[in-house]
Image 1 (cartoon, rainbow, N blue to C red):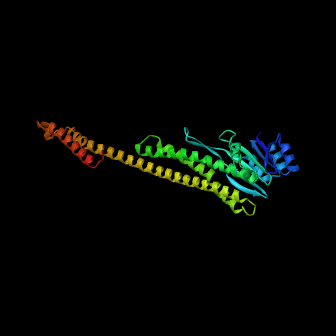
Image 2: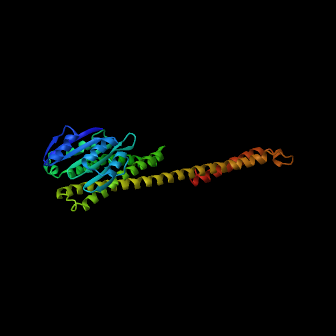
Image 3: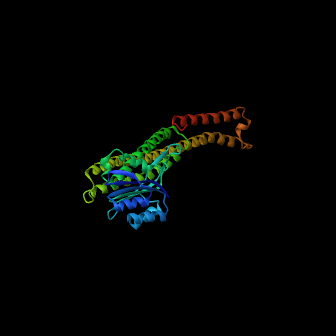
Length: 327
């Protein structure tokens, strides 16, 4: 286990670094203090020790220890348990890398358990820096730290959105240019958009649930405003992902239509050449029977006339199919 951050706020005003988790828990018990702890990939035993000290519900701790949770927001008494999915876009591979952060928010503590971080152990400490120089947020307590984490994750979704949009624009150009492999690219990018939707869309419902419980759980007015701002960004992200999904579905349909049209054109060409070659083949087959009683065998112009008939038939059919745009 790596302790990425361990900070105690005395009277929710003066932050001070604590030398150990045990010291943080002692200060919480002895003084009017709240603590902010960030753990990176703790094992079940280590997380269990912290859970006992903070009085976390066993079901939430079990989910956090197992990992691979869907984004969600649950309340266990006075403690909120949130699962969030930070994201990072790899433009070269055209893949969205997802992390997983579990946040426990109590009256006097904020605990973030990072199970995976696409940015390399930076997502939570960098998010909490949003509170620096803002005493009003510090006095709001652990709920402000949850806001900072949500706000940072949603803001980091925007570069991912921009990367996906750029690749979708490229696909639209390639689609009608007949670039090989575009079908595979569309399908793979469609999968990335669907995965991203699963990570981002639940944030909308999570923040809406926070608003519904704002009065009951005494969420300060300033924090309600800030969560509303995050909600607006989350809704815009969800709407753009819906648009991307529809665009890629349409692209798959268009690609299938173009493939069917190309196949139909190829079928026409094959049928046309088969018809063109049929007439000379028929004449040559009859002419080549060499029966005893065939007038053209002894006729001087029999052979040239047969060849001329083959050429005329083939040329006539070629012109007909050309007019019909089979070639």
